[in-house]
Image (cartoon, rainbow, N blue to C red):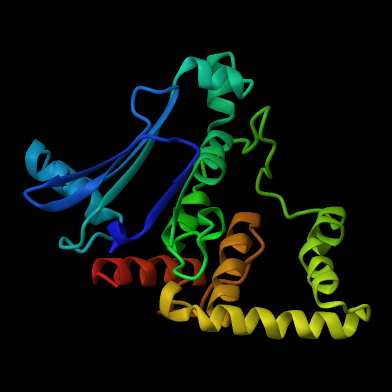
Length: 249
């Protein structure tokens, strides 16, 4: 379940909430320049009586039974200034960049790894990866955190920055032959992810497929529609994760 996951954040103050012994969410760094809330909107709806939301959720595919969660961030003026945003127009322009900064650099929902005590290396929860890809329909970068606006990465990024993991692997393993190193790297990556499948709920091939689907959707490079009756890989990934979490896995 979601409460078994772990929040990694630059913030130090976390509050966990419950309603009638039912876990209802977290508050992070409240009253700070940057804060967040992740909470069970279904429980909140039961208390507020805003039943009209049920129809809105149903229009978006809600089955009427599963819990609906809400993630929200609050940027105060000082936090916005540190990120180079000084006017309302700039705020509207860089909503995507603020969201990406908040969900990538400042806060992550992760899966605890019992064999790795360094929390910053724990894998990002797959549901959180979907949240990170939220499309605000505006420029993604903000002044301090320049990020992609949805365009595919350049050759320079792919073949310079993208070689970092492989060359680090080669140095660690003492391999100079790039062809042998590439094959060994892929085999080691497969073993690593398959060994953690019980923890993360996803195999190496599944991990690759979902990463490609998320990024292809972001870049707009998946031009071919899925066959009739089949979900887009991105939507299938979201649905699969939603079912897993709802079933308490």
